Image (tube, rainbow, N blue to C red; front, side):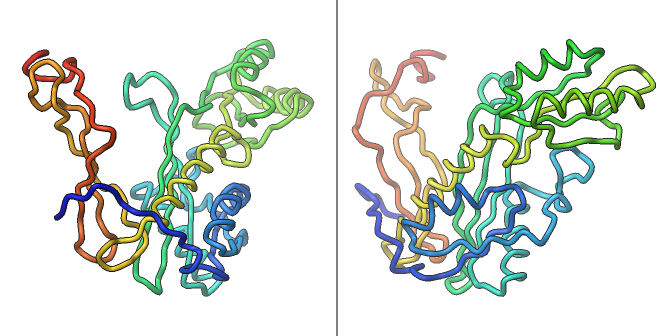
Length: 292
């Protein structure tokens, strides 16, 4: 492991210029991913839509996702590569839950995985942020209207089913007030308890807030692809760990604030600790001596 002042970025177009990169999606992600990657990598995104990605897990819970988020992205990328017979693939996978700080705000974390079989590497990109993700058991049309307005409808599409969240009778992609009213009447007619369960559609093409987070993850992926290992020259020399220890402004002890980043190569064993700049004093609030 070595300490380095900076990590130099490069133009990765020479590595991937003219290459076709498989992208499996049925939810419109190719638009934002291609918009970010194609101009800078000078590659061409080969969109694959002949496989139903909901079979790998659905946000509406009919099919649970197996394994980790990055594992799901890997499976998607591999399927796209197999279907196109290409050595390069990229795929996206999202997850939703509470925010990592207070645990009360709906939160979206997006992962993009780039697989390069010629070089034997995988490079990832991540982004996260506040999500438009909510659900409600509605007892009347007024409840439906109020929930829809709070959820950014019709820009963000809705999903409806009768009686409760476990009911298999589901209608996805509701995108107009006219359709919402029609589907509500139809769903209410088969609901034995007189209620409908309404939730935000979390698929990327139906959720513009999530699509923007996917765009940011693609930008992070591009940044990581542009960072070449100083030892072997492979793309993806990126941060794998944050290192605490910024010196406290009051007593000089190490705080829990981040002072440096640990970069690692995806191919060889090379690692580098990169101090964050500009150097500043740590907040005593995060010092165990000043604030035990």
